[in-house]
View: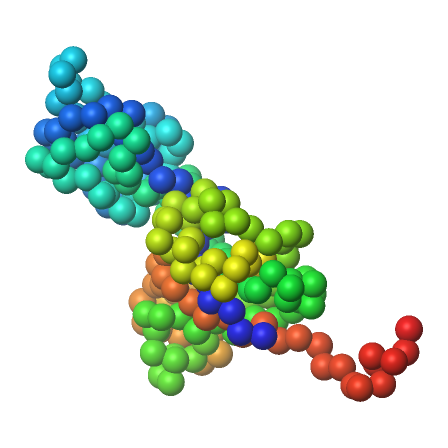
Length: 214
């Protein structure tokens, strides 16, 4: 079974919205930087003076939407923050399969992951195993809450509400990325979070007679 997905960390990301309306006068954080809870991200000039937009929870800033000089409204999206506490925290893959297909995927099933940033013909596929399968299809709002990206959520729910499948990546100290690949070494560079993937879940083979026997 093939399904689209993304490399991420197990706790996902959140979309930070501005609690103030005004003009961004200073950007206080950088993309890729780890921040503690409450860390300042933006300074906004409002009709009541300067206000600071802070991180709700600690993590890594993956996208800064607001730029210096831009005007924001209350509730405007200003940044996406990935919930991670340490740069060496392991990645996982989150796949999104059609709602009716989740029950056919067993925990522990092998998964081959084609990574968008890695040439498959040269370096092969990333190896993993199914760690968990969602109990129910997820709405677009639930996807946005985990991914921190409404456009990505819309993409994964294009064919209806999908079931989330958590894939644990197999580790390898012998590769540059730290993960196991179908090739001996894998790519000579690390793979990053938020990278799109396509997962091929290897299901158990069944004979036609298996459908007839209890």
